[in-house]
Length: 217
Image (cartoon, rainbow, N blue to C red; front, side, top):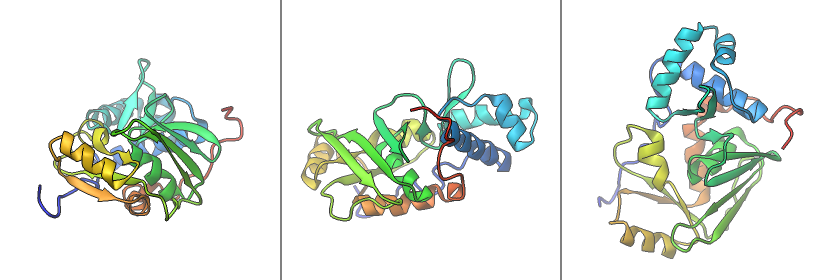
């Protein structure tokens, strides 16, 4: 392992051209606003593209792991925010979502400056971890430490998210690294994860601040 391993967080969610970025942002916006799957036809209307063009961009985004779709083709996750159950739970402004990795759970509310509660588990001991975020800021005195994987990232869900974890303590992180072959990456406390998240999700910072009042969670 090098002293300063490269992390793939720069441009982590950037895939394809400007149309792909518009579709990804629109999908994230609708998931945040409705907490429900987003049909391709709805995205086409919102971004001003044909359904065929949106389908092409969705296929490209899905291949890179930047979105997930259900069996009907609707988008159920975008940019790390999911409306289907996953390992990491995110209570965002009082509404229930899930995320692809623990880093998403801190980075998304940090970028959007929202209140949130992240529930996940330490990979070393299996103990539950809860991080309360206020106005996008995690607690400064938490013993929890995160891990940002290093190395190439072709598909964010396959190459980055599986190891973007939170650990109870530095000691639990050290144990995990020893038992997993000391993978490349960078350790970071919650505050640094939040700052990195503000960079990764910077293009989403001006999206709606809370879900529609009609969402019933």
